[in-house]
Amino acid sequence: MIKVENLYKNYKLSDGNEIIGIKNINLEIKEGEILGIIGTSGSGKTTLLRCLRGVERFDEGKITVDDVEVNAGDSKYYYNQLKKVTAIHLQRNFGLWPASCRENILRKFYGAKYGDEASTNLKEAEEEFGEETDKLLKLVGLKDKEKYSSLVLSGGEKQRLIMARQLAKRPKLLLLDEPATMACPKTKQEILDAVKKINKELGVTVVVVSHLPEVQKYLADRIVLMDNGEIVEISDDVNAITNKFLSDMEPIVDIDLKASDESIIKVNDIKKEFYVLQAGVSLQMEDINFEVKKGDILTLLGPSGAGKTVLLRIMDGLDETDDGNVTYKLEKDDNGEMWVDIHKPSLNRMDVRRKVGFMYQEFALQHYATIRDQLAVKLGYKNNQVVENAKKIAKKEGLSDELLDSLYLLTDLTEDEAKRRLEQVGIMPQSLDDLFPKFPAKAVKETVADLFEHLDLSLDVLDRRSYELSGGQKVRAMLSIVLASKPDILLLDEPFGDLDPKTLRVVSNSIKKLCKEYGITIVMVSHNTEFMKELSNRGIFMNDGEILDDSHDMDKLVKNFIEFCHADYLLEDE
Image (cartoon, rainbow, N blue to C red; front, top):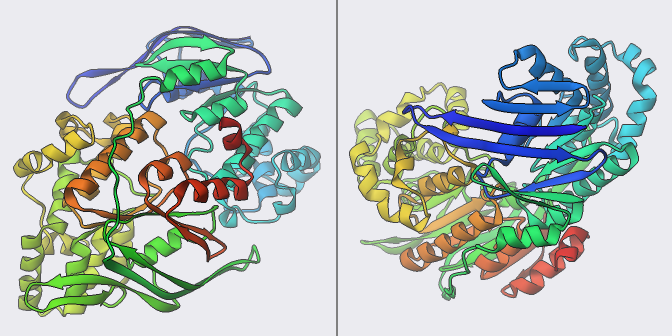
């Protein structure tokens, strides 16, 4: 028996206020079923899952899983008992040993029984758990990859390995928190089929949190709709509940975004090769040629490993090529126009970068800084006056144009990656702050007020930290940081994969309005087929480092992509 009774959980903010996590949750989960939980970002889905797992202390109520019973005021001992009978797979979680798939599962079996994965005697573990490990590898479709290191697995393979490790705990209840949200359709299909197989062949009860209706329709036997921390409805009619969930979705804004005939980016004869020795696999990108027109909203689509992210990072100058180049059109007041190579340091490249915003998959808000502070930093980096002053400081200090521009490139990286690159050449991270000081904090609110309105973000968010925001608010806050300087060009690497469809529609509509108002050109990587159809006016379909199609017919391109990925869960939804 799995039962939740009168569960309440609130969170305290740094200003002393409280926000509701979940309230008055009453729920019985049937043995052997797949129970879906759907709702918008911030509706309480993950909080409920964490309470079921025993990692989140709740304020009131009781949770029962078979003979384990936990009440709100119980000690940590009882919460730990709940951990022993449940297993969880969190979104974007790739906590794995840098070892083979087989060793990862053996370690989990050993740790579950003897309490410490790190001290696993692999010979003994193989003798005791080898047969069960074989079964789990086969169950999640990784038997042919059992000797591969987790470091060289694809995203989908990593997620299936994580599931196998969780199953090695022999849980009564498997909890999945958006396990396939960030995956491409091909990978997502593999993950969803693995979940079905686990449920059917092992009889494991599964609770899957997903805000994607197509995922719930494919998996769930029964579904819970949540909103504002409460259960709105529970039903066996998954279609009816998902339709209800989407019923108040914002309509698509009627803005037809068309590109001009003016080329502003040229991708010329790009060649790039990767080879992973242990896996014996490679990606060879060769003869990549296309132009981006002003006003394009261009999506790079294709399965995981197709080379999309690599190409986007090359386009931003963050990764080098083996051959070829990417050039940007730069209009100079005194010299007309010129084409600037994004891989060659120069003051002209600084001027290009100032007008380009880049948002990558790992783009994350700083945990300790307010949104206002992070906006102030980005506005400082991209402010024309700040950049011109940095050029004067560099000249006075004897820094070469190439070094100054190379330092400026680091402002588009994550804080950790920027620090790492600075340390490699013996430069203190403080140097970036000295050259590109923050925008005045008091002026941030006025500067971003219009942008926040477009993104449906309250200005109260400015003085919050990342852990005080819902998932949807985090993504929109991240987008505001990239858009605050009003760039001419946006390069987006799957930054919206965590969003529920209703919040994604708001973001899509916001981007359309901003593109219309500010004339922004976008090149993005996305796996969300509906999002790319709604927003894009052009798509480039890639696989194995090769361009298969370049088309303005997004409906046809997306259909071909779904069929290419054999994504049955999407076909069922049509």
